[in-house]
Image (cartoon, rainbow, N blue to C red; front, side, top):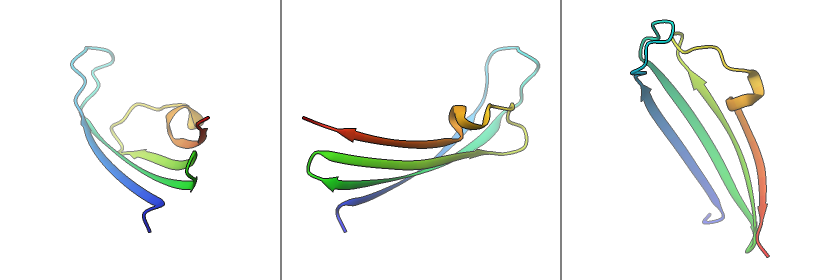
Length: 71
């Protein structure tokens, strides 16, 4: 099915700045893009991090939902 495009990403975050002594942590994200038509793209995704990650607002970077229409 060429109109469904899955993507999985693994990131090892190692902050090099000294703010609260953040340790390195891992972040995992998955996206699914569906091409509804030749010019309409729908995207849904989520991101998770392990226990050492700093707290982020729930809808800031955890969930993604979008639609792109090209004219």
